[in-house]
Amino acid sequence: MTPGQPSIVVIGVGNEYRSDDGAGIAVARQLRMLFPIGVTILEESGEGGTLIEAWKGATWVMLVDAVRSGATPGTIRRLDARVAPVPIGFFHYSTHAFSVAEAVELARSLDQLPAHLILYGIEGENFSAGVELSSAVEQAVDAVVERAAVEVRAAILPKADS
Amino acid sequence: MKSRTIKVDYLARVEGEGALSVKIKGQQVTDVKLRIFEPPRFFEAFLRGRKFNEAPDITARICGICPIAYQMSACHAIEDACGVKITGPIRDLRRLIYCGEWIESHALHIYLLHAPDFLGYEDAIRMAKDHPVEVKRGLRLKKAGNEIVRLLGGREIHPINVRVGGFYKVPDKKEFSPLGEELKWARDAALETVHWVATFAFPEFDRDYEFVALRHPDEYPFNEGRIVSNKEMDIAVREYDQNFVEDHVSHSNALQSRIKERNSYFVGPQARYNLNFDKLSPMAQEAARSAGLGPVCRNPFQSIIVRSVEMLYACDEALRIIDQYEMPNTPAVSVEPRVSTGYGCTEAPRGICYHRYRLDDRGIILDAKIVPPTSQNLKTIEGDLWQFVQAHLVIQKDKLQWQCEQAVRNYDPCISCATHFLKLHIEAE
Image (cartoon, rainbow over all chains, first blue to last red; front, side, top):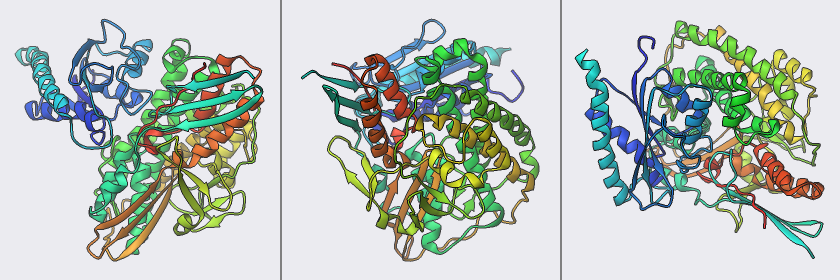
């Protein structure tokens, strides 16, 4: 770590003009209100190369994105990227073919994964053009914010104690 | 008669989602369809009723890969409506930020999306295991482009510092120093890229294309120029609608563009290169020659070389601009609305991106039209597939499918722009 580089990074991925694809962005914005300092909170389109850059140098990373896996809308999935590979196509509805799953796996191939990388996926329902989240996704966003906030707090605290 | 279908329900490594199907009866290709599912034109509707100076920021959201292209075309069109022309250092900074976008977009496509086709890997993840040096070079090149966009745009995704009339703030000269050092590395790396991709094997392919790009008397085109072709088109940007038409085709939600008098046309790096080779920097011209290219390259499979040459040019041009930069007195010129229609066309990484806005006296947008580069190439991509599949019916189906996908990727289609999402598929029955 060089000074000035963020060690705790939360990345909301998605496109807020694509209805439920904006779920990750919505989570990032709520977390930013809860954690005005101590955490770097980014909003990204999900383009993989940029994601690898975004978490470079960070030790603790959480990424939130919309998912379309066929599950019930609003379903929340939590994956620990260090434990198992991310299924390619899982974060299928990010705008780009070289996206979240590919970025994680490419970083793994190049030995550039952060020490801690948690991915939250929120099953979306409607990915057409628009700026509203569907109600199931909106509730899931609130639930992810709550769960993520607990994890982020735990990541910050040991630093605050030291 | 034996018939078969090649269908790709999910075409990987193109931006967004779309589907491709090719039908073959006996020894004849009978149908090629590039399907796009998403309803387009959301943004055009979204722009109506908005203020003229909101257009750059709203249209930047169309694509996470090429927001600058949308911002630049929007700014130029609005300034055209308002009778303003940007010159001097602000104009140079616009070229510079565009260099950044070309570098990042081209690096992504060359290294992570297209090279695996040529080297026989399913994707960049698998390629990275055997070619980590190249993949890391691609990522660092992409980052160099991102850094330009970040410095001038405020951030690299959906940049916020671009405005009608110029920028909200501009850097002073010394802020460019670290960037300049990285760009010197990037220029060398781009030259290595040209040499690297020139070693790939390319299928033989040629068609009677009409290449369309901007052409400017003094420079390789980014922001300004006339729209020209190798078939004697030479028009002002404001004559676009009289010369090009968009058709709604039943199999696709994206509109397909064609030239009114003729038919399909080809935009993007290869069109720019073929129509502007003489405007490339000496270093870029020399690199192209050393890679075996002449001033015209017609084989779309070699677009990866052309894209690499353009990436080298963008690094070279960025360094030139930084070197001669003097901070302007004001970051933007004042732009006052008036009742008018304005036209803008700039060279996105994937080709010309056309915008038209009609404003009222308060600067409210009454009507907007946006034509992204990919929708202009769709007919040409379909045409390539007709000819390519017909000529290669004897090869094994999985190999043919692979090469069909590769043929689509020759155009780096940004389907998220064309439809604001696309899904491309090839499948066999």
